[in-house]
Length: 43
Image (tube, rainbow, N blue to C red):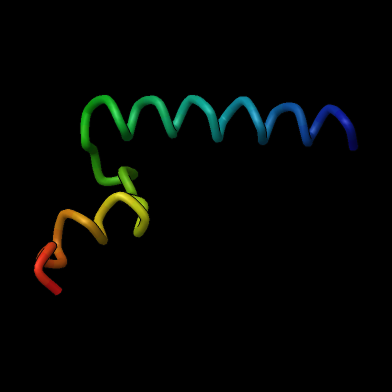
């Protein structure tokens, strides 16, 4: 099972890098980063 966890971790890293770099369909913006960008600072 440890091998499966390592594989899943590696795939997650690869998908994360690919998504963040190319803004592909796998890219999921984090709410923490979107919040200050979408909400007005005067709120």
